[in-house]
Image (cartoon, rainbow, N blue to C red; front, side):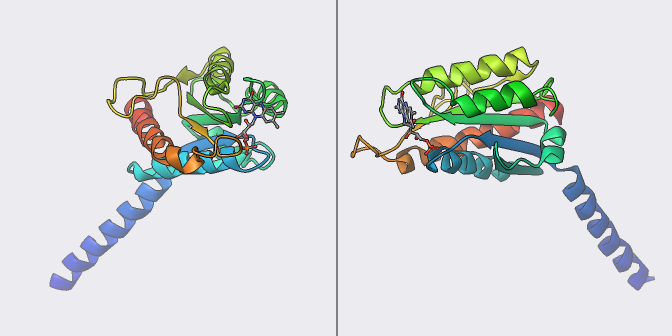
Length: 192
Ligand SMILES: Cc1cc2nc3c(=O)[nH]c(=O)nc-3n(C[C@H](O)[C@H](O)[C@H](O)COP(=O)(O)O)c2cc1C
Protein backbone atom coordinates (compact mmCIF):
# COMPACT_ATOMS: atom_id res chain seq x y z
CA UNK A 1 0.00 0.00 0.00
CA UNK A 2 2.72 2.36 1.13
CA UNK A 3 4.86 1.37 -1.85
CA UNK A 4 1.97 2.06 -4.27
CA UNK A 5 1.40 5.53 -2.85
CA UNK A 6 5.08 6.39 -3.12
CA UNK A 7 5.22 4.99 -6.66
CA UNK A 8 2.23 7.11 -7.67
CA UNK A 9 3.77 10.24 -6.23
CA UNK A 10 7.04 9.60 -8.07
CA UNK A 11 5.20 8.86 -11.34
CA UNK A 12 3.08 12.01 -11.02
CA UNK A 13 6.13 14.17 -10.42
CA UNK A 14 7.88 12.61 -13.40
CA UNK A 15 4.91 12.99 -15.72
CA UNK A 16 4.39 16.60 -14.60
CA UNK A 17 8.06 17.28 -15.23
CA UNK A 18 7.87 15.92 -18.76
CA UNK A 19 4.65 17.82 -19.44
CA UNK A 20 6.16 21.06 -18.24
CA UNK A 21 9.25 20.60 -20.37
CA UNK A 22 7.08 19.96 -23.44
CA UNK A 23 4.85 22.94 -22.62
CA UNK A 24 7.67 25.45 -22.25
CA UNK A 25 7.02 28.72 -24.06
CA UNK A 26 9.41 29.04 -26.99
CA UNK A 27 11.04 32.41 -27.63
CA UNK A 28 13.47 33.28 -30.40
CA UNK A 29 16.12 35.96 -30.72
CA UNK A 30 17.21 36.59 -34.32
CA UNK A 31 20.11 38.81 -35.30
CA UNK A 32 22.58 39.79 -37.99
CA UNK A 33 26.15 40.15 -36.78
CA UNK A 34 29.43 40.43 -38.67
CA UNK A 35 31.90 40.96 -35.80
CA UNK A 36 30.09 39.40 -32.84
CA UNK A 37 28.67 42.33 -30.87
CA UNK A 38 25.06 41.85 -31.89
CA UNK A 39 25.37 38.08 -31.51
CA UNK A 40 26.61 38.64 -27.95
CA UNK A 41 23.72 41.01 -27.22
CA UNK A 42 21.24 38.49 -28.61
CA UNK A 43 22.68 35.73 -26.46
CA UNK A 44 22.33 37.94 -23.37
CA UNK A 45 18.67 38.58 -24.24
CA UNK A 46 18.08 34.82 -24.59
CA UNK A 47 19.82 34.30 -21.24
CA UNK A 48 17.41 36.78 -19.65
CA UNK A 49 14.43 35.10 -21.29
CA UNK A 50 15.51 31.73 -19.94
CA UNK A 51 15.44 33.15 -16.39
CA UNK A 52 11.64 33.34 -16.70
CA UNK A 53 9.78 30.21 -15.66
CA UNK A 54 8.79 27.57 -18.21
CA UNK A 55 10.53 29.33 -21.05
CA UNK A 56 12.85 27.95 -23.72
CA UNK A 57 14.70 30.74 -25.51
CA UNK A 58 17.26 30.34 -28.29
CA UNK A 59 19.27 32.90 -30.26
CA UNK A 60 19.86 32.49 -34.00
CA UNK A 61 21.89 34.25 -36.66
CA UNK A 62 19.82 34.95 -39.77
CA UNK A 63 22.25 32.59 -41.51
CA UNK A 64 21.52 29.65 -39.20
CA UNK A 65 17.85 29.56 -38.22
CA UNK A 66 15.90 26.62 -36.79
CA UNK A 67 12.74 27.41 -38.74
CA UNK A 68 10.51 24.97 -36.84
CA UNK A 69 11.54 26.52 -33.54
CA UNK A 70 10.90 30.06 -34.81
CA UNK A 71 7.48 29.10 -36.17
CA UNK A 72 6.51 27.69 -32.77
CA UNK A 73 7.89 30.69 -30.85
CA UNK A 74 5.31 33.00 -29.27
CA UNK A 75 7.76 35.90 -29.21
CA UNK A 76 10.66 37.02 -31.39
CA UNK A 77 13.23 39.71 -30.63
CA UNK A 78 15.23 40.93 -33.62
CA UNK A 79 18.57 42.73 -33.51
CA UNK A 80 20.96 44.52 -35.84
CA UNK A 81 24.14 46.55 -35.76
CA UNK A 82 23.67 50.17 -36.77
CA UNK A 83 24.81 50.62 -40.37
CA UNK A 84 24.50 54.34 -41.12
CA UNK A 85 21.72 54.34 -38.51
CA UNK A 86 19.85 51.63 -40.43
CA UNK A 87 19.43 47.90 -39.95
CA UNK A 88 21.86 45.89 -42.06
CA UNK A 89 20.87 45.25 -45.68
CA UNK A 90 21.15 41.49 -45.02
CA UNK A 91 18.72 41.64 -42.11
CA UNK A 92 16.36 43.85 -44.08
CA UNK A 93 16.35 41.45 -47.02
CA UNK A 94 15.97 38.46 -44.71
CA UNK A 95 13.01 40.01 -42.88
CA UNK A 96 11.21 40.89 -46.09
CA UNK A 97 11.61 37.37 -47.45
CA UNK A 98 11.14 35.31 -44.26
CA UNK A 99 8.75 37.02 -41.83
CA UNK A 100 5.65 35.78 -43.65
CA UNK A 101 6.90 32.24 -44.15
CA UNK A 102 7.95 31.96 -40.50
CA UNK A 103 4.56 33.12 -39.25
CA UNK A 104 5.55 36.33 -37.49
CA UNK A 105 1.94 37.58 -37.48
CA UNK A 106 0.36 37.56 -34.03
CA UNK A 107 3.62 36.92 -32.15
CA UNK A 108 5.07 39.38 -29.63
CA UNK A 109 7.97 41.30 -31.19
CA UNK A 110 10.87 43.25 -29.79
CA UNK A 111 14.05 44.81 -31.14
CA UNK A 112 17.61 45.61 -30.10
CA UNK A 113 20.73 47.14 -31.60
CA UNK A 114 24.47 47.64 -31.23
CA UNK A 115 26.58 50.56 -32.39
CA UNK A 116 30.10 51.97 -32.08
CA UNK A 117 29.14 55.56 -31.24
CA UNK A 118 26.95 56.63 -28.33
CA UNK A 119 24.82 58.53 -30.82
CA UNK A 120 25.34 56.05 -33.62
CA UNK A 121 21.73 55.50 -34.64
CA UNK A 122 20.72 52.49 -32.53
CA UNK A 123 17.31 54.05 -31.80
CA UNK A 124 16.48 54.45 -35.48
CA UNK A 125 17.61 50.88 -36.17
CA UNK A 126 15.18 49.67 -33.52
CA UNK A 127 12.40 51.86 -34.90
CA UNK A 128 12.91 50.36 -38.35
CA UNK A 129 12.81 46.81 -37.01
CA UNK A 130 9.68 47.51 -34.94
CA UNK A 131 8.05 49.05 -38.00
CA UNK A 132 8.70 45.91 -40.04
CA UNK A 133 7.36 43.78 -37.17
CA UNK A 134 4.16 45.86 -37.03
CA UNK A 135 3.70 45.64 -40.79
CA UNK A 136 3.92 41.87 -40.42
CA UNK A 137 1.15 41.86 -37.82
CA UNK A 138 3.26 41.40 -34.71
CA UNK A 139 2.42 42.92 -31.32
CA UNK A 140 5.39 45.02 -30.23
CA UNK A 141 6.82 45.33 -26.73
CA UNK A 142 9.71 47.37 -25.31
CA UNK A 143 8.95 47.43 -21.55
CA UNK A 144 9.20 51.25 -21.82
CA UNK A 145 8.96 53.04 -18.52
CA UNK A 146 6.43 50.60 -17.11
CA UNK A 147 9.00 48.37 -15.37
CA UNK A 148 11.02 51.09 -13.66
CA UNK A 149 14.79 51.09 -13.83
CA UNK A 150 16.44 50.48 -16.15
CA UNK A 151 13.97 52.33 -18.38
CA UNK A 152 14.23 50.91 -21.91
CA UNK A 153 12.37 53.18 -24.29
CA UNK A 154 12.26 51.17 -27.54
CA UNK A 155 14.71 48.34 -27.00
CA UNK A 156 18.18 47.80 -25.53
CA UNK A 157 21.24 49.29 -27.27
CA UNK A 158 24.89 48.57 -26.57
CA UNK A 159 27.92 50.61 -27.61
CA UNK A 160 31.12 48.68 -28.29
CA UNK A 161 34.67 49.91 -27.70
CA UNK A 162 35.81 49.96 -31.36
CA UNK A 163 36.17 53.75 -31.21
CA UNK A 164 34.93 54.93 -27.81
CA UNK A 165 37.53 53.25 -25.61
CA UNK A 166 35.63 54.19 -22.45
CA UNK A 167 32.72 52.14 -23.76
CA UNK A 168 32.23 48.37 -23.92
CA UNK A 169 29.42 45.92 -24.69
CA UNK A 170 29.83 44.54 -21.15
CA UNK A 171 28.51 47.86 -19.80
CA UNK A 172 25.16 47.05 -21.40
CA UNK A 173 24.96 43.36 -20.53
CA UNK A 174 22.48 43.80 -17.67
CA UNK A 175 20.11 45.84 -19.82
CA UNK A 176 19.99 43.12 -22.45
CA UNK A 177 19.41 40.42 -19.83
CA UNK A 178 16.71 42.42 -18.04
CA UNK A 179 15.01 43.19 -21.34
CA UNK A 180 14.96 39.46 -22.15
CA UNK A 181 13.43 38.65 -18.78
CA UNK A 182 10.76 41.35 -19.12
CA UNK A 183 9.95 40.24 -22.65
CA UNK A 184 9.50 36.61 -21.58
CA UNK A 185 7.20 37.61 -18.72
CA UNK A 186 5.09 39.70 -21.09
CA UNK A 187 4.79 36.78 -23.50
CA UNK A 188 3.53 34.62 -20.63
CA UNK A 189 0.98 37.28 -19.68
CA UNK A 190 -0.27 37.63 -23.24
CA UNK A 191 -0.22 33.97 -24.35
CA UNK A 192 0.17 31.92 -21.16
C1 LIG B 1 29.01 49.44 -43.04
C2 LIG B 1 29.01 49.81 -41.57
C3 LIG B 1 28.29 50.93 -41.18
C4 LIG B 1 28.29 51.29 -39.82
N1 LIG B 1 27.57 52.39 -39.44
C5 LIG B 1 27.54 52.74 -38.12
C6 LIG B 1 26.78 53.87 -37.69
O1 LIG B 1 26.11 54.55 -38.46
N2 LIG B 1 26.81 54.18 -36.36
C7 LIG B 1 27.53 53.46 -35.46
O2 LIG B 1 27.51 53.77 -34.26
N3 LIG B 1 28.23 52.34 -35.84
C8 LIG B 1 28.24 52.00 -37.13
N4 LIG B 1 28.93 50.86 -37.53
C9 LIG B 1 29.55 50.03 -36.50
C10 LIG B 1 28.66 48.86 -36.06
O3 LIG B 1 27.32 49.24 -35.90
C11 LIG B 1 29.12 48.30 -34.72
O4 LIG B 1 30.49 48.03 -34.71
C12 LIG B 1 28.32 47.06 -34.36
O5 LIG B 1 28.44 46.76 -33.00
C13 LIG B 1 28.77 45.85 -35.17
O6 LIG B 1 27.97 44.77 -34.85
P1 LIG B 1 28.46 43.25 -35.06
O7 LIG B 1 29.74 43.09 -34.27
O8 LIG B 1 27.36 42.43 -34.53
O9 LIG B 1 28.69 43.07 -36.52
C14 LIG B 1 28.98 50.51 -38.86
C15 LIG B 1 29.69 49.37 -39.29
C16 LIG B 1 29.70 49.03 -40.64
C17 LIG B 1 30.46 47.79 -41.06
